[in-house]
Length: 352
Image (cartoon, rainbow, N blue to C red; front, side, top):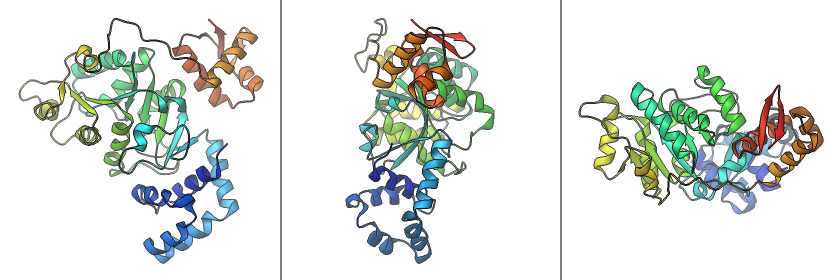
């Protein structure tokens, strides 16, 4: 399932003592052959002893991999073919992405939508509408907070689009907990990713660091709401630093949740009153249907299995293909989006 290089990075990523910047530098050591000398020079004695001993412990290594598999977590490392080039080229890219859902979305054209937790109902409605429209051409990327992030994900999903949610914590946690139904839907019909091992809980300092991933994945970033200190502005700053396009909703004078958006426009961000303001930058015609992506090898295998079974019960499809049910479920969702299968209810599907 993983190459030895990938496994080495997954094991190194399991150590909370190593920062994301440190893991990036470490991953650049030649095939990790000289990593021990690097650790000795840069870590305290206690941390070095722990990392060095467990890194070589077959029981520890096997336990990490088995735990991830049991939880339905797929790892995409910076050495993996599925790692997105857009993210690889930023400063301090995540060495390992822990994923639940359709990992093929990492290689699609992405556009991020971010904003404040304290967003007006009017702006939330506009965000959902815009997200649905953007999802006709891009995979919509956002965080997972209440407010604008949730609205972006909900709007794209409601339109049958593809989404990626970037968590600021490990996948053992849903934060905020009230968004668990949304997390289940994103996992089924999109992708959840994080750079943190599963057992790592949310910390305040994780969120600004996480925002570099949202910006790094995306061709452009739309800020739908932001006061002067909003974390959404951090995402916009990352996007600008990476040479990506920044867009912002315009706000009336004195609107608290729009002060940051207006400041971005003053600094050169594209004003986005409607979808044409975004699609025009990329010479996209909103009225022309997007071309359906071809089926991947896995999608085609599931499609053929559903077609051969007729009224296909999802566990039977998984058993036929010898794949885990969670993996088949995410593929089925992708096939629904591509209008290749239809849900019949009761976990049953038919080919269209």
